[in-house]
Length: 292
Image (tube, rainbow, N blue to C red; front, side, top):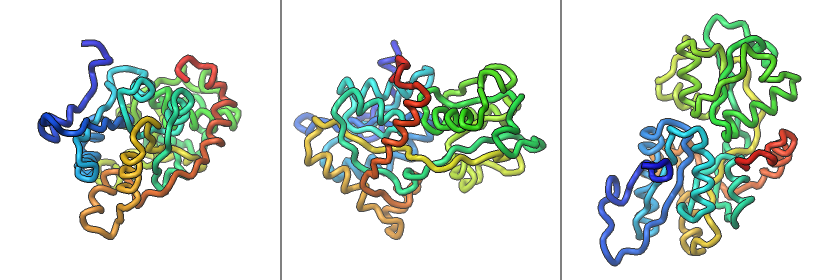
């Protein structure tokens, strides 16, 4: 089976029940593979169920195979090719998708306006700044990840650090934030960078112990993550999905688990600060890459 057929979650059958004849066609939601597939699916399942109820039609979730180094690009390709109707993009992925096909931004979390990356090391490391990471074996996440590579690369270069020359060997790419964390904890690399929100979540869930990991540097905030739909998705569907997110309230006992699974306090209408991100990517010359 080829990689294009390796899509995780067949929700109409495996989670949501078999689609019955005569039902409206399923809305296909693509999720960014920024963590282990099982974790992503588990966290999103309550929201998938809510959307299915709101839309009164099946909702199918797809996640690109994590076995491929370009899994973020796979999600963009699926969106552009019409294999996904609505997607949860990182900042770079959103820009890539919207640059290739008409795209309608829907919502973003409040925290996505000022997202951060954490540069992490093991206890005993004396690194308390980006400069302190020089000479270390270092890992980024995925090459198309805003928080796991592109923005960290920008901040390193702003500090005059060349990852290809100033680390102990070329930087490695783990593929996901959780794997970067595993590599640092295991000693495969001395330091790495990951999604700050995921790091904080692992702390809250007591799946991570600060006695075993250090935060050497926290990046300034930048825009990241966006829910967006193809513009050929019917306007009433887009509006219902958007309103479902906007209506979530942390004080509501039924909404709270959904928000927790989405690592959100509440959702807001898109604040398109992504022009700044695009300028940063242009500065990194990412637009000339074939993956754009």
